[in-house]
Image (cartoon, rainbow, N blue to C red; front, side, top):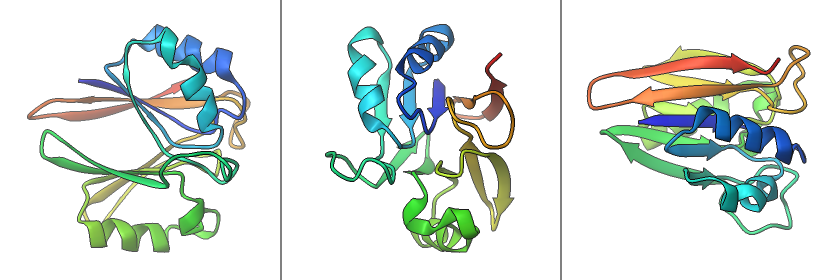
Length: 157
């Protein structure tokens, strides 16, 4: 299964749609900030969408966290602002341990991050439209099946 992990579109609907159509995933995990972007383009895509709200989505309907189980891998989707990820990952790590997840996908910082702690993999795909760590937006492609899980960071050019 191919899953696209994207965050922080901030109104970049055209870029968002272009990436989704190019990658043609089965699922899209949208990690917040401008959750309306993903729902405004959903009629143009065939992928299943799992989306969480970000800190700029305060007046919109949606969830702050989503827990999923794919091929017996537990996954937490969150924007990260409620866990104060701009100041470190301690709160997010505690939540992940408490929920006994295998993977945490989060956004908010607009910076790509990929690390493991206490047997849990944490990935922030960076911002697709307003990166703070480089000049180009980024996202992550996850490929998962019953045996393997692989991640590839992609940078827009």
